[in-house]
Image 1 (tube, rainbow, N blue to C red):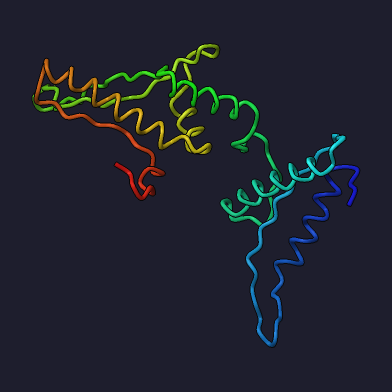
Image 2 (image 1 turned 45 degrees about the vertical axis):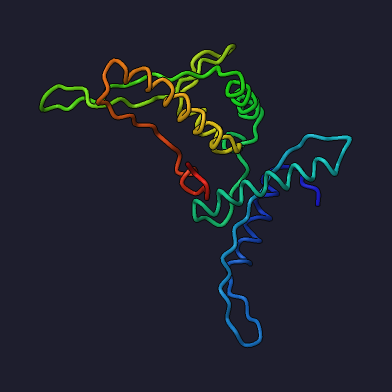
Length: 193
């Protein structure tokens, strides 16, 4: 199907949405369908139509997942919500390199008992100073790690590094606790620590 603009695509999506939300009657059964539609529109031309089709299907699947999450019938692909957009892919590759070359570092935040003012522990906080982009917020790079299959490597790196450094810290004060943040995705791993 050829469309001259996104409004035409949206009109088709709305028509489909209206039809798919009606109950389906099958062998005297009234079935309610729970359908979500994701769509992608682009006016670019290409020499490789199959590759373009694959890319549109990938984008439509991402949009459908967002429609499902938002509990709406249809959703348009939005590049900013795509874990595979070029900037995030580049940062994911850079993060993998940073892990391999030990280019991340940990800072420690003291944990203080308010009633006495005594430091009873430290929390390991991961930091990344990107060689070209400077400081990358943990909120950004942890999300990228989660979306690109790097979170297990990242978490293990933090735990190993923090334990090595904690050993040295404990030589100065041996009654400290160490806290390390993990991703909820780590909890779904069958062999997590």
